[in-house]
Structure formats: structure tokens, C-alpha cells
Length: 266
Image (cartoon, rainbow, N blue to C red):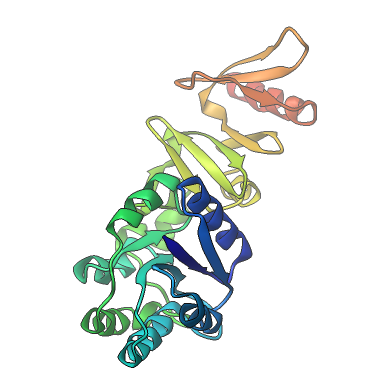
């Protein structure tokens, strides 16, 4: 399979290219905007395009429209798999119109499944999609479900995260830790692990009362700290309730962690 990855964000392209390689796709071409993508389609005729929606010069929907037009001139239109950061409420049109899409950050197992199901977009589907998403394109306000209103988000009780299911609301009290993993952050809850596209710095500022930094790459929920202990080699680790593996505590952040733990015991 020959795949074209089109995204204006270098890190996003890098991640998709790496995941495709891990899934056995050996021919991948990259484009940093829609205009370049159009050129590559005519030159290398890919079987599939992983296409971002919000891009400068030419957005993803415009790319798909152009390819539909050029199909009349004997250019075979590849299958399109939209990659987007929009939430599920702004993307109901994708589901209704049976157009495949992935939500960023893309996970390997979800991409693998999507590759098996990818399909071509027809003209009627694209026209409906363009109309229904006109308010969610650059320069407009994205649709947000009332349950995720700004007042609730600012209360600190919930964290809104983009997952493969869309924008999900997670109770902060169920989160055990946030840990930086390569280009994204991994959130560990009571029952699952979720990729989050916010940085640790942003999460630390937003939930400073509930979490404390223990390492440059990790935040832990203070209320879920079970034990702070020193290993045989002198390194410090923190044990969290319901989390089997201990997390390393750096020398720089050990004192602040001890202080937070002691404040809860007073």
C-alpha cells in the first residue's frame, strides 16, 4: 500500500509515518499542506491519503473536492482517511456519511483498524460534510456539547481529553498520573490509559491542587499516593493506589512531594 500523509504539523506527520512503518506500510510520502498533497497524488498515485482538515493554503475538505474534480480527467482518487482534532459533536457528519476519520493523537491500534476499513469519499458525501462542518472550519467556533461547557471545565472537577471516541469528560479523582511519552502525554486512570494532547506544564497549571510533579516527565495525584520509598540503589519511588508499577521520583522534586504528602496528614 502506498500512503500519502498530509498535515501541516511536522510532529503529527512524524508520528503517523512512524506508526505506518510499524504496521508494515513501506511506501509513505509526506506533504505539509493541501496544495503539495494535490501534486503528490498526480505524481505517485497513492492508494490512501491520511488527510488533516485544518491546514493553511488548502484545507483537507478542499483537497478532497479538488481530487473529485480531477477524477473526471482519469485521475484515480485515492481512499481518504481524515485526521482531525475536532470533537465528536462537531463530527457527527462523518459518521452519518460513512466517511472514515481519526482523532488526534492517533493511536496505533486504531490506525490499524482504520486502514482495513478505509474507503473512497463520493461527491454527495463530501458536499454534505462541507456544509455541516462549515461552522467548525478555521476562523469559526467549534461545536461543543453543553455538557462540556466552560463553567464545568473551569471547576477542576473534570478533565476534557481528545480520545479515539471523541472529546471525553474524565473525573479528575479517577486519574492516577500523567506521564510524558515521546510526543504526547499518557493519562492513567482507574481502569485505562489514555493519550492526552496537552503538555505536562499545561496540566500542572490547570490541576495544581490535585497533582504534584515528581519528575520532569510525570505528575501524580496527591490523594492517591500510597507510599514514598527509597530503593536499594538510593533512588526514590512513589507507589500509587491501584497502580502496580512504582514511579520514579527525581531528587529535584522529592522535597515538594514530601511536603504535599505531609500537608494531607495534618
